[in-house]
Length: 168
Image 1 (spheres, rainbow, N blue to C red):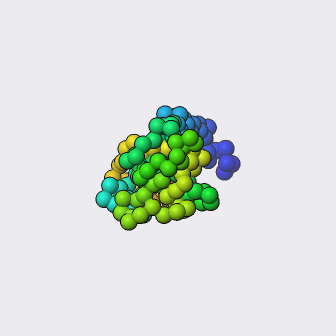
Image 2: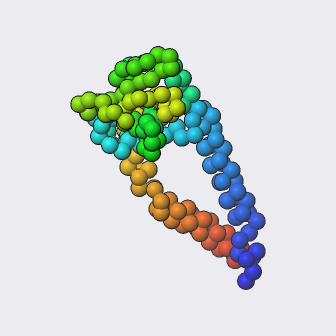
Image 3: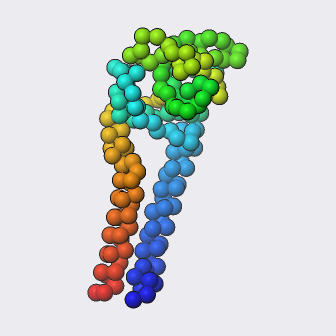
């Protein structure tokens, strides 16, 4: 049996439509929230009780750094190394021109040099505008390789259903 007979044009069309829909949704969220990644999962207890581990944060990347005030919860890259994303509350404004801020996790006793400050516009990713409690458990479950397995199973089912319909 030839591959053209197994995978119909309709199956290929379905897969292309799904890929286009996912791309449009992803690009739309980037435009609406003004950032490449508007969703983050809380991975530590440094912001308890305000944020719990596995809460999903919605971040407004287009919220201007110059408008950040004490008390805002922001997402930023670890200063200097930029090797980690951190979510903490703005604790103080160190300097206004250029703006430099100091943050602190709500559960931490003090700000940690090199982690919580100095935060400049370069490190800033966005302001937390909404929290979705506990949804991070699902996202964690769907991390690779599980997500690839699910995609493979769905595509296999689609192709199988097409083959079954053709045989009838």
